[in-house]
Length: 349
Image 1: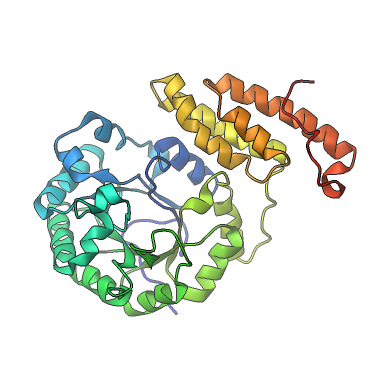
Image 2: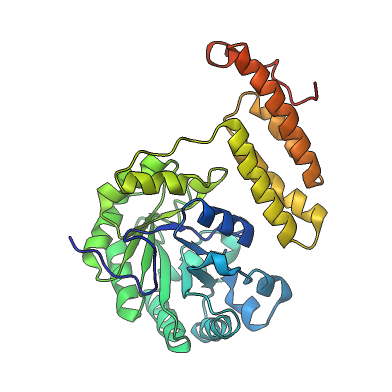
């Protein structure tokens, strides 16, 4: 089967995307994921009203570095004219590689204003928004959808075809309904049906927690690209590992504890250089630290310490102390044979 053509340059025939995620898909994390193999990144979703009113907090989230390309800016809203104005401003001021429309967010405060997946209750509105945005920018317009608003309205192929007919150039499907939120399983069969039905590239999204999941989704759905969301939390190397599996190459080893901490500190330094408020940046980074140490021996104590940090120097010290204790623990041969890891602490020796 011949691959569909993306409307902007991608480095691989089957690109790996970093999904747009509020509070996570910020510039430092996007750059980190690019370094670790993500082909395309998308900003966290931004309000069309905030953009057109030039809200300072919203505009600040539109910043991106040259090394983040190819990058898309994702916008949401329920008024075609406002969405068009926002797309035009984004195009003129920031010139990303594409503009993405969010029809997938299930969060109440977004849906309450008929934005995100709330639009899926009115497919005429969906088409009007896509047409308005497409007319307002010369950039490719892409969309991210869910399989429907509810089980009763679940019809991803019809939704996707209507998006394509309205001018969408790439479509990403998170194969759950809005009412499912993030519960249950994503229906990968629906991604396969949409990929077969559309002439434009289709991205599969949902339930990718490991590089092997990404390969299974690709094999199962024959999608044109794979979009990784929460599975990237604390493991940006997932992209490089998945790429190797896509290409039939040996998968790079999962980083050791020391290597994992080095990636986390690299991420922290990028955040420190990007944010104006160092204390606020450290507090906000706590969630990433929790993800980086997930699954490590005695991770509950480690997370508890990391969730109290107020500056990035504390993070490095906690990691140094933990790594010394961990290496001593491994040297005693205890990790594999002894389930009691209570002696592994994060205190300085």
